[in-house]
Length: 138
Image 1 (tube, rainbow, N blue to C red):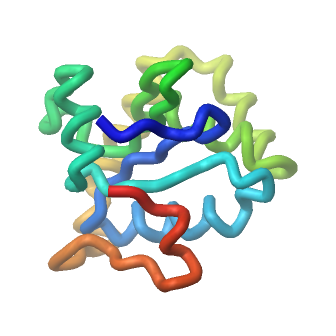
Image 2 (tube, helix red, strand yellow):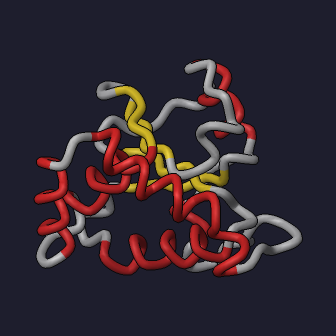
């Protein structure tokens, strides 16, 4: 598996989901510390991480946050850890860590289950612009 720089975390996302792609662009715009790299779940590295952690993609078909030192975070926990690193006011979302994970994930799963219906779906994964290409790995 491709090695990540030690100071980076990898955000894996559904590359054909319009909501997910918009979320990635939102994070890129606010990632002032250049803390994140991105890859679609459908990419080579995405599949390697899914295999490494033996994830059921029918149960976890959403955002994953991977760091070689810290391991893998999924669903609402991944989203909140991402928000924490984006600075004010996004880091205020970490208040939701007080909500039990199973409750956070019920809400998360409801949105994830309906994301194509509400936001649409692309035919293929997003192709980053030349300026953004350095933020993506395969």
